[in-house]
Length: 105
Image (cartoon, rainbow, N blue to C red; front, side, top):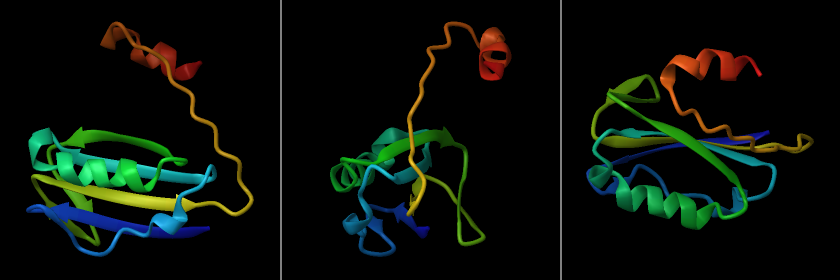
């Protein structure tokens, strides 16, 4: 497995995004600010660089990167698996009260 992590803060990345990791066996996990305007451009760069990858994520009240806590940022972990086949599965949750039962499925 090849993995790289990035932080997007104040309109810039801490490192150049390595788009060569894009593949059907790449998982990109994003944790971002609840104010999407703060991270919109950074998230767009992720989606443009990882068109074949599975991208998942959520909003947070604080993003962690290299043992530091950030706010108003986008923390990203990219993992390219060599011998693992990934598959995305989604389920619509109409009511938060049903989330535990749905998660057990």
